[in-house]
Image 1 (tube, rainbow, N blue to C red):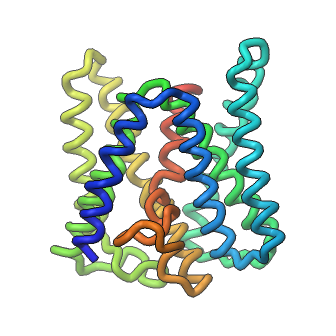
Image 2 (tube, one colour; image 1 turned 60 degrees about the horizontal axis):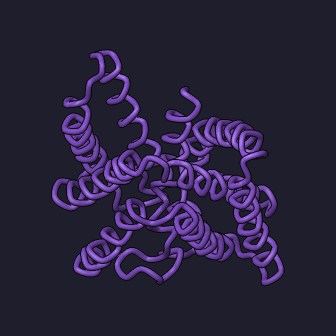
Image 3 (cartoon, rainbow, N blue to C red; image 1 turned 135 degrees about the horizontal axis):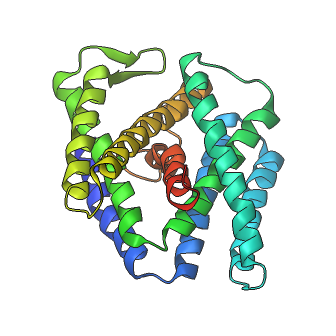
Length: 270
């Protein structure tokens, strides 16, 4: 399993970095849309949707994304679209920060299909638009992805080596508090290396460190959220597309909350 995880990471990460740095914005928009399309399909499987609901959910998400992307290239309406989406993303981020941790802590099992569908739709669309906008600053986007990668990797190996105390045994028995501590240390060191050389005041650097820790925490809750849905659905993985990782949703679960939060910090300034 570990060899497959490493092999998949070695192949996919350079491709992702090259896309972020060198691809045209339209190419990136289409890639991000394709990514959330795959996630939507896996989400529908977790929710137990039938064929018709899968089509409605996935097509509405993809078509909405393509429509917004198209309008964003029209100079006359771009400010209106951008301002409207800023409000939508801000609302989504605030709701996610408030609800997803509670969802995980109390292990809610929502039986109303449209509620879970709405939550997934908003999360995926927020993730998509945030990724599209952050592509405008490739270095920042790579830095955020690197932070989550460091968090996931240090948590994984710290948990394997030192894990004794379960973090959420009823949701994901293999995740431990020792893994969280390892992730915290890894993110702290990673952030210091990046932040210290920057020409900002001490207070601003402290705010950046706090934001980095918040991104890590949101990444953990995103991971636990998808793990909870998988456990409730009786599934080990969301899919089989990525060897050693499972599905696409298994791979981006840590990014579903953290990327929109990063977008909110930069573009809205909370």
